[in-house]
Length: 79
Image 1: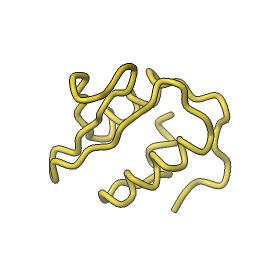
Image 2: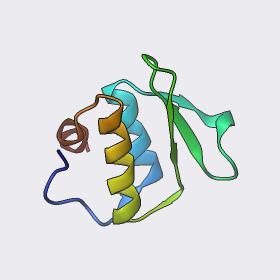
Image 3: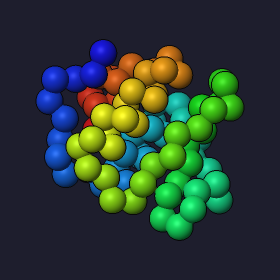
């Protein structure tokens, strides 16, 4: 379940750090331009993280992480 309040100022660097902390692997060569892929080592599936993130993109990243079995609240607690 998504946390009720999400920050509006999200940096790519910070969200990458948090996703790495909860278990994702960062694969910088996979993205286009300033996009970076984070890979779930258990399934091999990835999420693309944009450089300029808005609240809506953060919500989509968290939904994608939840679909892979991660807890969005835990991710945001590490943020």
